[in-house]
Length: 183
Image 1 (spheres, rainbow, N blue to C red):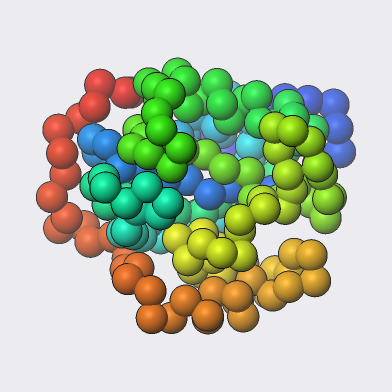
Image 2 (cartoon, rainbow, N blue to C red):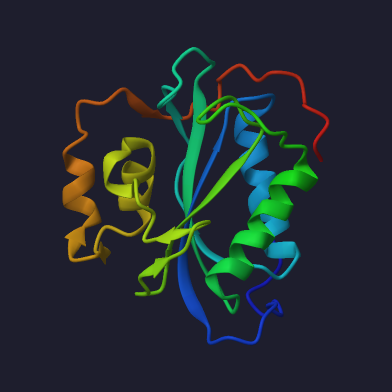
């Protein structure tokens, strides 16, 4: 990834953000790494921390392949809806196609928080409205930001609730599907 001197897009103040990333099509872990590289290369986010990648069961629509999930912390100058447009563009450029809600996806990039800001809009709610219900977000986020609290709730304590969930770190030995063509 480029050095931290990367010029960021936007005119807003430098703001810490959290992202959740997931993939369950093709080279799942590779898709996450590629999305993070694109976010940084395009000046959308200066990535400051990346969690391990985790192998997780599908959530919501369960009749699909397992997911690779990770979280990242970063800095941006984009306002929430500008950041949403930029992350959606990365998803589209990587080849994500419309699917059923919570269905299979080449890449999914969720904005988890944008500074301390509470933001409510038809397209985006921050902090992410389902953040505290998802082990596949809380466990990787607690790994890289154990002292973080959002809306007065500790991420570390919230993640501990899911200690019995089937979530495990991605194995470097894990069999990869052939590349999906994104790249």
